[in-house]
Length: 289
Image (cartoon, rainbow, N blue to C red; front, side, top):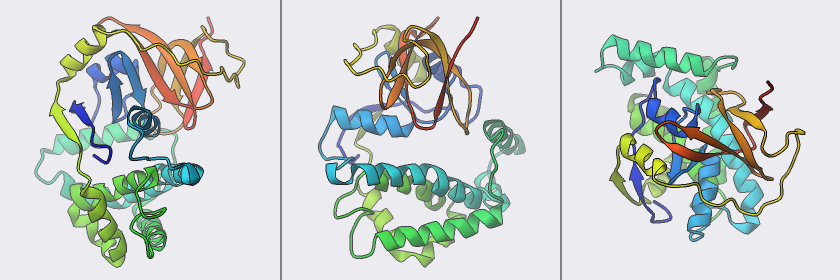
């Protein structure tokens, strides 16, 4: 929305199985992902970088704030996100979210997220609510006498921080009272929502797979190979998130730059695709015979 882009929107099931997603990614199942032909970009951190290259203005990563913006965005995607989810999907919130759905919908959602959380230490609802209140106050302090978190214009920090608060305010409004103590944050949220969503059009997952099958991955940029693992390009590898949603994607390592990994893989339906992951938050392993 901020960059005024036109795009095609494919709705992804909220729980597994997600066969059309896996056909494109090879295993990664988190939402969202970005597809450009036969190139699949996983994780919003990488997606935002790709969008910045596609349309540099207006900027998401201002030069003088690039490091700070990324750090705030990473905090938003971890500490803030999990506190917000722990509060919003507490027993009261979860009951409200599934109030008009059959019991099996709530059970399926709980089982799916439990599988994604394997090995994680999650905040209990009371602890999450306490942390959420503190995080909201910190956001309010950042917004003191300025319209956005890091200045007069939004950047990636704003969009990352907006996401979990949007979930509370819009998806489970019965839990949104926690926002009332920080009116500056609510006013900022109103400014954020005003950017809209660009120009989306509906697209089916079947069409998305067909689009991948009809294309070839874009040529890889001539970027330096950064070998931190002793794994050569051309090796068979897996990549997985280091904590939440750790399903692996297996393929041939064709790029490992300072910021991201690229795996080449072939799917019976999607054909030859490149799947791209950010380095931060992901684990690369070699597949040994």
